[in-house]
Amino acid sequence: MSFSEPMLAPWLLITCGILSFCIMGLALAQRPWGALLADRALQHRWLAATVAVVLFWQLRAQAVDWLTLHLMFTALLTLIFKAPLAMVTNLIANLALVLLGKTAWPLLGANVLITGVIPVGVIVLVWRLVDRRLPDNLMIFLFLCGFFGAALATLGTGLAGLGLVMLGASDPDAIYLAREYALFLPLLMPSEAFLTGMLLSILMVYHPGWVATFNDHRYIDTK
Image 1 (cartoon, rainbow, N blue to C red):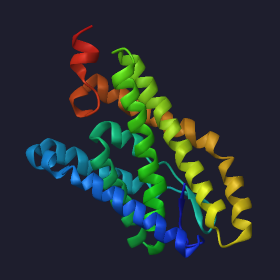
Image 2 (cartoon, rainbow, N blue to C red):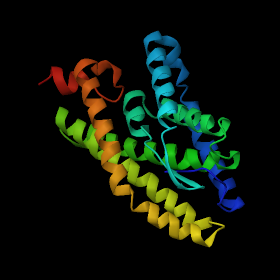
Image 3 (cartoon, one colour):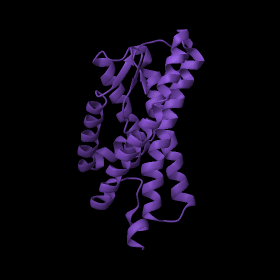
Image 4 (tube, rainbow, N blue to C red):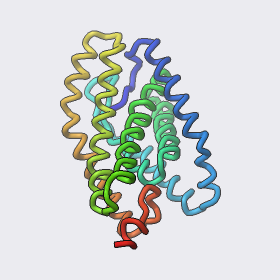
């Protein structure tokens, strides 16, 4: 879920922009370009994934002018590249929508917040729980991070978008329409979870070293 036309109150757009800017600054403070510069293969994988996400985001369902539904792949990017690079990819995808004229400039901060910050935060929490608290089991990692985590990240995005509309929508009808769109979340959640889990399982089998959050020594070699 993302916004395509500025129907939120100006103060809320400014607040979302500041929050997104600060969190993006924290992500860049981790210097994710260091890993890219040191690994040419990682550069190719990350650039290919970024281009793929930008293209997939063009496939959107839109019944009203200001709200769209689309697959995000943010959870998958976070598991493969970790949070900083996933946030950069999300920013690039949102900027692409703005440059193509599909999203208004004032909505950039709000869209980065609900399609990037929220799902990245959710999947990082799930991953840390699995990594630190649960047994080193490959299926636990795959199902909780890949399937359940992606579904939970999608739910977080939808609820965050609905919350922003209820908090600062300038159009009274927008709240009703946002609630109607929220009914599609049970359809988006399994779709995002299936794609994330399927692609993650393929990478874990054939190229486990490509998944930055997956330690093949812990989950495979020691078994």
